Image (cartoon, rainbow, N blue to C red; front, side, top):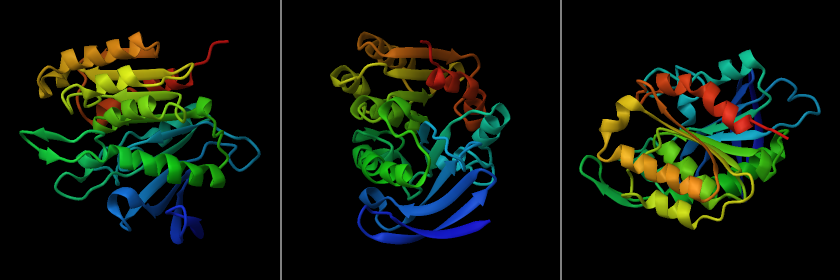
Length: 276
């Protein structure tokens, strides 16, 4: 089923977009002006049962949206299948996931890095993570809050991602803590910028009740030098800042969508856990 409408994609100029509805997931296009200009990007919006009534929901924003829901859209043909999990377990949560910058040579790395860095494999990468987060918080989130039945407050706004998306989730919870209260960082690329994420965490203004889920697969520790040390430093920095941290080393965990899919129950339990 498809529908059409208008929305202020750049905050000022309305642009025509096409909504494709697949069960409870809407797909539509909008540009990320700050990073890739007018090039359209796919936005996936998962709507839980009750979204067509008066109920309002917390919202989880996710990176690499093309890998979140559908195998046919995923980069390597395997998604997280997150919509199926949410449906099966009746989780009252909206999910907004945007696909990454696919431009060569390092579009995704650039968009999902808060820091400019040089790597022996990827070369020189200009960090545009701040520009992306400006778009997400100042354009996309207001767009979502105006169109969908969200609970827009900080306490009910979360963010999550894996790999470079995991790095960005840590960056978002640190630098945009007035917007996001909880984050899930799966296999975060804390090797980027030679430990600068630790400095970002140390300087962050964390609000009350900040929650972070962070994990790393045991089999992927050797993918980058000093990964265990970087991971431990990051976890320690979060704990010292009073963040409520759930940290796991996933037994035999790999750097892939199939493994991250298996962690869905763990990170969702952390993001949604409440105790009076």
